[in-house]
Amino acid sequence: MKRGDLAELAGSTGLGAWTAFGVLTMVVVGRDGSPQFGDSDLLSWSVGHQPDMAVAFARGVTATGTGVVPYLLAVLAGIIAGRTLRQRMTAVALCLACLGAGQALRYAVMTLVARPRPPHADWAAHASGWAFPSGHTTTAALTAGLLVIAVRVRGSRGTTLLTLAIGGWGALVGLTRVYLGVHWFTDVVGGWLFALGWLGACLCAVAWWLPERLIPGTTDTAPEPREDHAPQDPGRRGRSRPA
Image (tube, rainbow, N blue to C red; front, top):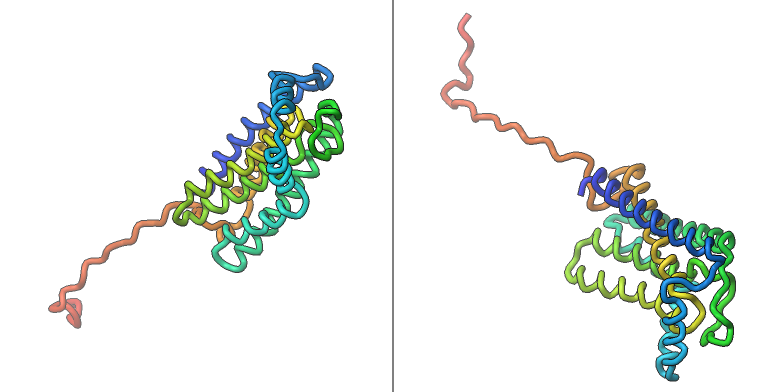
């Protein structure tokens, strides 16, 4: 894919996600953080359907959306994306920067919105801080997005299955936050939209400004056609031009 097309696609996707996130944020703020769009119904269902095995599984999945695991996966994404040592080092640095900066920006938004979490009595896992957007959801979605981009860049066998598996993990981490009673569903939706918007912005910036030799799978322009030269007549070789 040409880098201009990649930048346009990433920028458009990111802008759309940011727009949706902005609308959702305004709704949450405008209603003082109260439950929205079926939040209460989904929380009530989750609290009423929590067998021990399901809760243990949800806790295990949700734990992969925070701490060192996302950063290790971001490093893996960089290694997969690059084809040369230089590309891999650059990709690892960019993936870590995207994830770290995204978490910092998400924390700033969360602090400004200051949405309360669901009632503490419904919690089935530890949680801290404000609710919107969900931190575990945002981190897992960012990490999953980096891995999906890396896998698609390499284009190896099983790309579709890997993409579905990685995307499924990213989505499942967010859903466990609702199931464990520590987030409203709109917190999770906000995390997904935030992650998609940030990934789009980062990918657009990389496609526009990073030197082409460091971006595997992209081109600036189509290669110029080669000129075909007709072979010389052997009989004319060595002939001198008439005076």
